[in-house]
Length: 193
Image 1: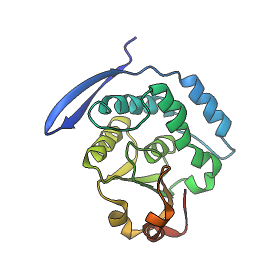
Image 2: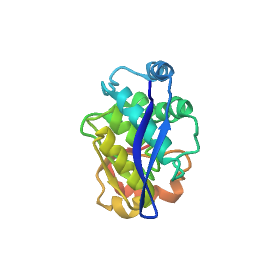
Image 3: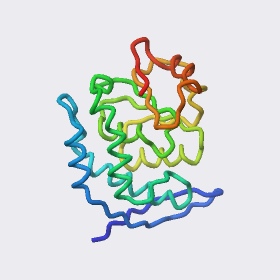
Image 4: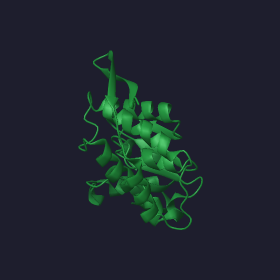
């Protein structure tokens, strides 16, 4: 069957259409989820479908914007998707219903977009300073129905209002570089992962 997913990307004011075939073996993903799942962890019932759309968009937009260093759709699913869900699997109390989560420097949406797709009761805000990547995140939000807010700004400037229960970021964020901004963004009992 046809596994390609059409999408729009923007480069220098022009609309470009990409048709990139994406073939993923979701069985390994299901096995990995089962291995990290703890009691109290519940994933969205349509997670597979939504992540399939998301992985297709990453492949398509990756032609115009450097979205992630992971090139294989299978590696994307087996590593970045599973890694993004390790937080709620290990600390379900930090990712419960109506908890406010901020993803600092979301980039291609890891881990915040995956969290929003897997845990639809979270209130997730994705902070991304790159306008192109923020546009990508908006496209993912529209195409997957993810319940997220995309803020095209630096986390330090946008998070001043505070009140986030959990702040997440991928490897590479040094606490001494962003610690003050994160502390201001967190609720009094909040956590940074």
